[in-house]
Length: 270
Image (tube, rainbow, N blue to C red; front, side):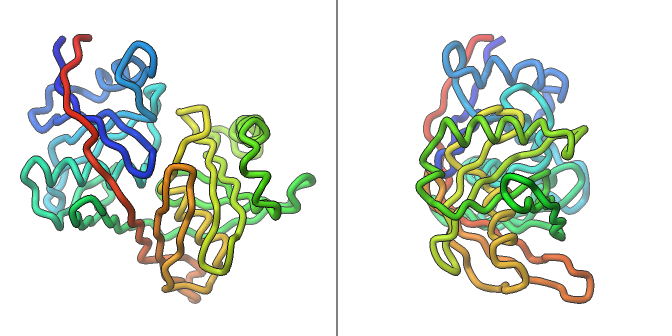
């Protein structure tokens, strides 16, 4: 099989994307192809695979299918959403458009290399005690996340420690059966945090995580909202914004903004 693909990246979170508007690739086939396409030695190399597929509703311009590098369903991917919107605009979709993921509509605005994504999720924070970290925040920003505040920002540079603890927590029985993405963050100031994420499905640290950036922004700011937050990831800077509904104790109007670009276009024999 000869596959045309697009390689994209958003603050170092990289993806192999396929224009699947003709429906050639079923979900099952994409899941089979993902480990091959995402392999950094024998394939193209990526954190996950994106497919721009036909819309499944009357509201969206198309459907975003996202799978982890191992072929598993990742739920929503914020950087993947920004990257597929960048690709869609390249393919002729308007700068402002809507796509759906698992039946949920996401609005997007593409401005040159910067893409802003608006989330329909309305998460709330659940906090549990932890013997090592004092507490762990659990939050769903389109996919499962836990957020752990680290007081010493230098500890986030210890990648071996972060990777090992992230791996352990990703499979911790408290977050079974699905497991979770694990975010370690350290506040730089009131509106700026440093973040590194261990991503489920990638099973390693990634250079950036969009839904994780939203998760730690909310957990850091709590109900102090409607201000732009800067999240410094190893791969670059993301910006977040959100509101808080005191009646429902949920967060709304989630926004994720940052760079997204097409790196190259190619063909691959599979």
